[in-house]
Length: 101
Image 1: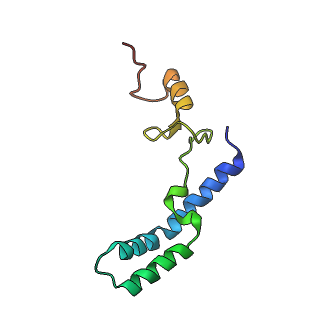
Image 2 (image 1 turned 45 degrees about the horizontal axis):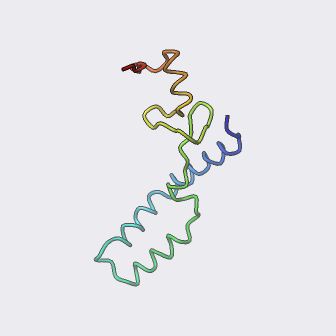
Image 3 (image 1 turned 180 degrees about the horizontal axis):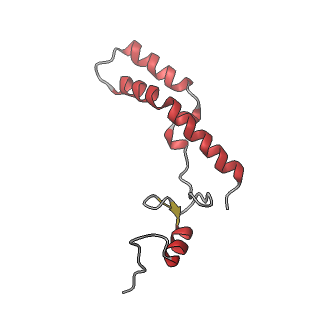
């Protein structure tokens, strides 16, 4: 089980990312576009740098939805490898079978 503070901080980051997502996309498009004048590109770059660090989507950590474990996260299930294994053995994940060869 992850610390409650780490889980809460990650949830705050998700909210901040959602709040700034549209503006970040606009600024990045201005910076990326070859038709943008240099002065406007420079202003967009400065505004992007002024935004909070947590506004970047790469700062959000994928965590297990059950216990908040940050490592071994499987996107298809939203769980860590530990919980996927235990829930699959218990039969809680439909369509998942234990493989043997």
